[in-house]
Image (tube, rainbow, N blue to C red; front, side):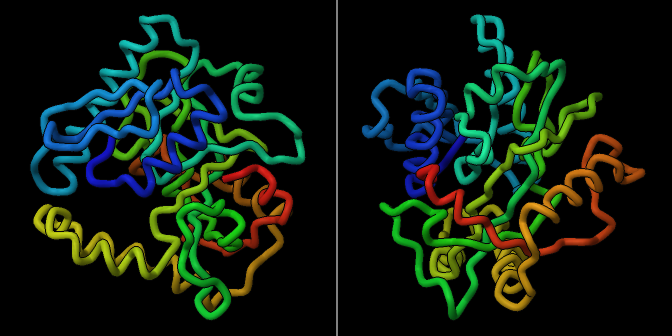
Length: 271
């Protein structure tokens, strides 16, 4: 579900269309004043009434609408339903040599599964401004291992997502090996500064949220990058075992947020 986010929606439709077939994409427009995209003619575009309110209230309203739509898709015959924000791309480690559809088709998804969250940043002084029509992973090579983006993205049956897809209500979820959720929402300082000036978002109380997210760029710039293959495995096991006492169905890492360098093998996947 998107509003005024054509930059990410273009990447989202391109990536998931190639992985799953554009005819299997469902895009909810937050507000009937939104322009209908013309670059994904086979996708299902669903204009919705605007979800108003503060960030937290609007997030809850949007995820309820999306959970309702997921239930409809299961009823229509889909085996799995994937839910992500427009700036989040699920991808399989290319060392396996399979795409997302083939990878998921052999999993026994009884409730929900997740990829390990990679919050992509920008290493200032080494990586320049993002170029929209080039693959992101050719331009960005560093990520923070952040539990906020280890999300219950893939449902095996009708369930209710929590706000932002961070959990499913009354269920746990399994973090799958070799599956990653790339979050690109805060991977470019120039774009982040431009979003500070978006009057629509500022009116909904997003300023504090956006400023907080610039922390990823600061951490990626100053912290030493660890080996990806070793430390993503450690993070996956830690997130599987550690859950906050106040949210047993969300992952935790005891305050540890290492930075890793994305292996060069990922540049070939076209993301």
